[in-house]
Image 1: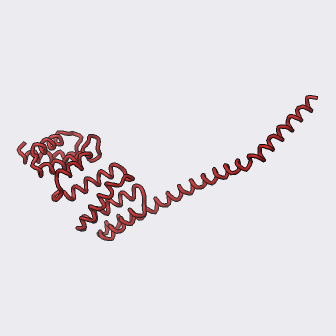
Image 2: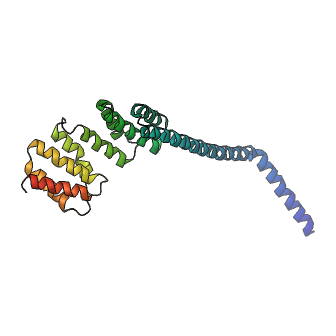
Image 3: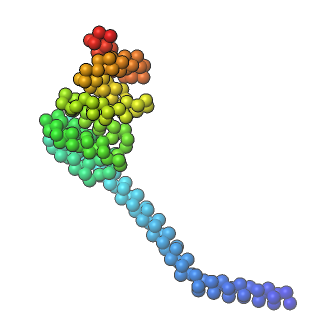
Length: 214
């Protein structure tokens, strides 16, 4: 008798399972298909990004080769194309390379536009944006208004900043242009005494202190 009840119970479970499948099976299938499609899409996207990175790397290397061959103008154009068509690190490096070449070719305005654009690009790494600020000020050092330039460099001078020593040195030079000799001396002294600063920079700071009579 118990076997009969067991068979009936199994039949009922099967009927319920069949009813549930008929009611919800299509949704289960849809979810399964969606998961497969998403997984396939993710894999395909990663493959595409990898191919893009490899292609960007090859184009970047080709532009570097043009520099080595002394073809500055062609290299600048090539770096510009990499910057426009690539993403991530290659694009940022290509922008910096193009700007440096433009400046070397005498196209200072074009170089400054690239530096300023990179400095304002929130998608770029913070250190690279700050480097662009530093280089933009450097190329304008003799013509820029000192006070706004010092303010622009101020965030870069904070402790722990990647370019703090160069930013402080440049700020001291700009302070001299404003007539703030005491402020410049103080900055140079802190640089000369800072064992974490590059040796060459410390030496320059010491020389400037000697010139300023400190």
